[in-house]
Picture 1 (cartoon, rainbow, N blue to C red):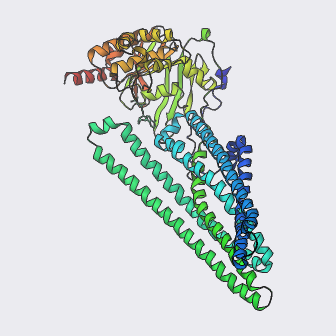
Picture 2 (picture 1 turned 135 degrees about the vertical axis):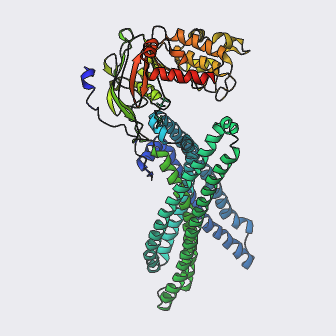
Picture 3 (picture 1 turned 90 degrees about the vertical axis):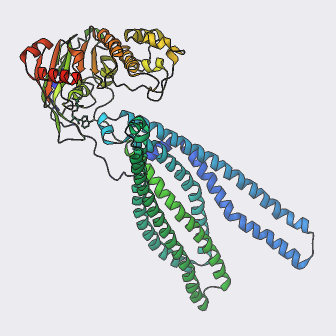
Length: 609
Ligand code: ADP
């Protein structure tokens, strides 16, 4: 059935999700993260609000206290202690409550901030892991890691600061506005007319700053990417004595980011300078307008004084809001960068789709009329109407010039990418209808002979192929892969830690661990991407022996970068220009005298040099 459905979306080109150059901050995504912490957040807001209200009260109480002292100084009558005790105790009480509220809201807010950040990290990481291989062709890992670390950090601190400080400044602004209104509605009305104009101008400058901030952060990530690549491949850098060039490359990117951040700083500075000027002009304007009101007997000089004092408080609060605004600009652009990938769905889902029961799986693969270009390079067609059948339990090797598309065939079988057109069948079913996680985890064993090991024990590295495997299964797989003997010769045996990239193991040892890792899942189909770098003869022999054992009874696809090891294959296919031009056994192809015999001759000649 699936066979017939296979052609339906045959011609849909594989697309990398278009990279949105300006990630937008999506409030509904933030809401999803904040929702579980809503009660704590509301609690924090209420407490912070309370603390802010008390902050308005405390100066008034202080004023009462000062009045008592002043009266006592003036009149020298009555009992000072007796009189001062009431207001003093009241003030002390307020201090206490204010302190409690403050620590309360900080505790709640840091809880909310930390949990939201942790949740974001976990979600973003899961989302990144879910993406297609094509996504990683288009995005540098350094930049992605930066989103998990720096951007989330920045977002978290902005989030906390904006809520705590912002709340206080806003409460004070509002509180003082109320006092202003009580003192003189007319004068307040004037302020209210002027203010929206200022806010509008502020928003305009703000949006420019936001863009600068985003560009600057992207540049930081780019610099990090350069460092990441150089440090991650430090051996190659050293082997080519490229330290100086890498240093220059990094310095160039860092200087660029320095310049951009300086510009951002300058932008924020101008913004703050302008807002200070504006606020001062409000004071000046108030005196001017208030003077007019006084001369019309609509206001007393004392009222004007109070109005000025209150408006000073508003000014201070607004100034702190403008500082916070800078923080918020940065927080929002970090947040947007964090959110950018959260809603990105991979074109190839991780799981979902049909499975073939283990006992009825035959392991026949057909590549039918496959055309393919990498999504990052749509102009270059790597496979052109490529056809190939992997018969069950047979070994098929693909040879051909480097860059001819051999590894691409393996990548398509793994469903790292979907073909631009054509169908890949497993036992007659389009693999796009099958469950990719089942396909990868259970059906296909992939042995890359330039393997990457994870920074953990050998045991864990082999178990990576089948997380639920017992120790006995791991050892069995290692034995099949000719790895058991060398592993047990280590003092720590299977618990030996292999370095970040397995630097403590030789090439042949790493290869055998990779073979064990693939064999432990007992796959029906084995894909061998042969090493391009040669091993010494002895290692080559043990590895080859392990591979011969591993391939028995399985459908095998060998991507051969060298010809010496595949002469026993059931079928050898020669690839050229994205399709197969010759196929047959070693001796058939030799006697034919075509491309294959050319390749063999060339390689022999090279070997003799
Ligand atoms: P082979 O295995 O025969 O050496 P590949 O299948 O690795 O060849 O590559 C075939 C072509 O596809 C090459 O031109 C290569 O540059 C290109 N290519 C390989 N991988 C990618 C990728 N991830 N993104 C874009 N182009 C790629």
